[in-house]
Structures are given as C-alpha cells and as structure tokens.
Length: 369
Image (cartoon, rainbow, N blue to C red; front, side, top):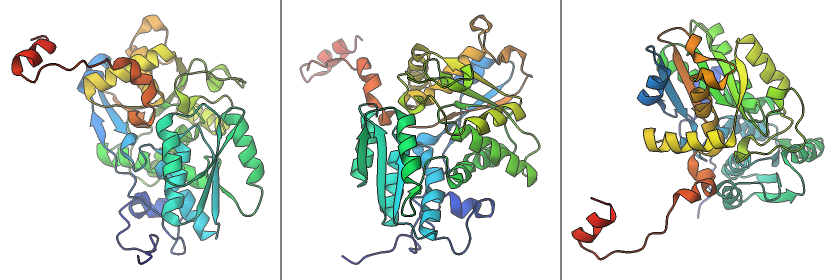
C-alpha cells in the first residue's frame, strides 16, 4: 500500500487550526496534524433553562463528539503539530484517560511514538482501550495521576520527549478554540460558563480564549467562569493538595492540578467561583442528562450539570446562587467527554433481559402496555 503523509494530504479534514490559525501558535512552517476536531454542537437545553427560570437560556457544549470523544483533541492537534515542527519523534503524557486517548490518536496520525504513563487500575476501560488501539506504549505505575505527572515531567527533561499534558502551553492554546466556537454560535460570550475542574487546564483555556476573542473585538462581554470539583477530589475548592483524591469521576480525580494557579486567576478575574458536588449528585446528573436531553456523558462531564442544579437550589448553599443572576442570562455548560468513555458506572442501569416469544402480545406485555 502506498504511504500517504497525513500532514501534507489535502484530505486531512478541517480542524481547529484551519479555522482559527491566526489565534494559535502556528505558522507556515508548522506541519498540521488534524483529525477534523472541533466544531462540536452547542445544544440548547429547554429543561435546564426551565430549571434556572426567569428567561435564562442554558446551552450544552458537547465535546464528546470530537474524534476521540473528548475535548482533549483540541489541544492535542496543536501540541502534536508543534512537536513535529520541533522534529520530535516521541510524545509522552500522564493521564486519567482522555489525554492518553487523544495523544495516542494524534501521534498515530503524525506517524510518531506515544508513551502514556497512568495510575494502575484507575483508568476507565473505554479510555484505556483507545490508548492501546491507537498503538501507544502504556506504562502503569503504582500511584495516582499526580505521581504519573511527576514521572512525565522528569522524563520530559530529555530532548527526545515532548510532553503533551496541559502543562504544555500548546495544549492550552488549542483548547481555547472551544470558547471561540461558543461566541461564534451565540454572537457573544455567555454570561456564565460552567465546567468540570480537574487538572484545571480547560477552565484556564476557556478564559484565555474568551479574553483573546474579546480583545479582537469578537464579543462584547466576558463570562463568569464557574468550575465544579468532585467533593472527594477538590484541591482548588479546599485550597490544599489532596493526597489521595477519591471520586467516581475518574477524569477529575486529581489532587494537585497542574494549572491550579492559572485556574484560580481565571476564576478570580472573571468574578466566578469554584464549588463542589458529590459523587451521588454527579451520577444523578449523568442519568438526568441522558434521559431528559438525550446527551450521554462520562461522570466528570456531569459535574457542571450537577453544579447547575446546586446553583438553582438555595437550600444546598451554592457558592454562586443562580437565584441572584440577572433575568435572561445565557449559561453554557461544557460536557467534556462521551459516556462510552467510562461505561462501567452505568452498568447498574442495565437489567437482565429474559427473552420473550416473538409476537406482539408478548412484547407488549414485556413493556407493560
């Protein structure tokens, strides 16, 4: 079979670099590695809008429809493209799952090696499967994500490895494009933006994207950034390192976020907030979003939905109560990954299906009609 250079191919797909090149750290010398990422839907949610009330509109930015089913693809297209520009032959990352899938896919696309360091036994099966499928070299360590990132930082000091975690500014640059898309879709920035808070790169990137588009005259306002952490993995909320973070939401099971300082600045400068939600609230929000809006997300992605419900209920003492926000406010919730990334947590929703006779009477009986 004839080898095709995916970087030079004219059929490489229209990704975020092609659309937003002038806002990104690329040039004519940068070999673009793309899988057609970005351009994910911004879905109006009538039921969440009704929950907030007073004419407010809630939209969901569904990042699970990126090529590897998470928001990480936005940053990875830029990070891997820049790694190629710098003649790197191996990228490396620590991961709770989504970064490993994106890094492995884009490295495969670029024709370079990918090494993934992850905490043993703590990665959702869908994400781990992706890393192997894309051909990454996966190394499991006896520790948590923060331990894995320390190892990756050390290895990244070598000249033959390019780190593609969000400590790499090229990752943050690529993830800014989600903010650009939201403004392009709405005609302005939202009043409030809710999202999960794990390693803190995404809230940092969104805020940087909003500010950059605002400076370019593409929007009139800037949103309040509101991040939600799982109660058992909430270092930013508690303002201390969590040595042993615990949550069902593996993507935000991080006790010492790499972008902690930048995230705190984003929250402060935007007059936003950081709050917590419990695992029970996260799982309830995950099921609610699937059954009421037809959007299936992984548990971490449900954190801002759980957070929105908390903000609407003064009895739960939210940090940022929505009972006080202006009428007709626009709210965006980013859901970062597809539900099939982490299917185990929904297994209890499945019931055994004893077969029935192949006739309409038995089928109607089974569905209780």
